[in-house]
Length: 188
Image 1 (tube, rainbow, N blue to C red):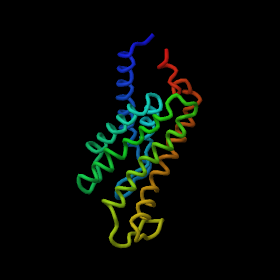
Image 2: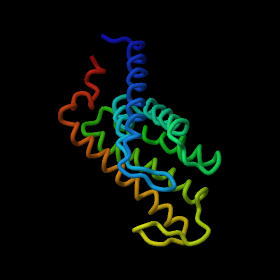
Image 3: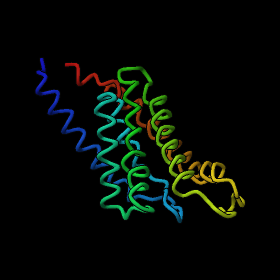
Image 4: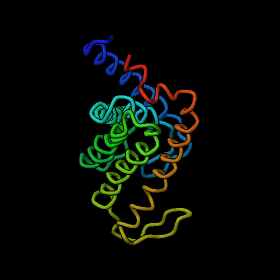
C-alpha cells in the first residue's frame, strides 16, 4: 500500500518529467505562424499528466509549462498583458483534462476540453491585445477587418491542428498504455 506522501512525491516527479517532455517537444515545430502560435506535440504530455493526476495537478503543470514557454522559448508578446494571457493563462487550461481522471477513454474529451480552454484564452488575447485596427491579411485565409473573426481564424489555424495532433497521439498510445492512462499503477 502506498502512502499519501509516496503519492505526492510520485505526482510531483511525474509532473516534472511530463512538463520537461512538453518543453522539449515544444521545439519540434511542424509549422510556426509569424505572430506566435505553432503546431507542436507539446500539449500532449500536459494533457496526459492531467488525465492521470486530476484537475489541480493538471492546472499546475499547465501553468508551469506556460511559464517555461514564456521564459525560454522566445516569447512573442505585446506587453505584460500578452505575457500573462498567451503564456501563463493560456497553457493552464490544458489541465482541464484532469476533470476526466479515472474515466475510460477520458483522455479524448479531456483533450478537447483542455484545448478549447487554451483556445478561448488565446481568442480573448486576440480580440483585446492583438486586435486589428485595419484590414489584415492572413495568407491563404483571406483579409479580415473584424477582430473577433481575425482572432478566431488566426488562433484556430494552429489550435485546431494542435488539438488534432494531441488526439492522434492519444489514439496511438491509448491501447498500449491503457493501464497507465487509467492510472491503475497509482491505485496499487
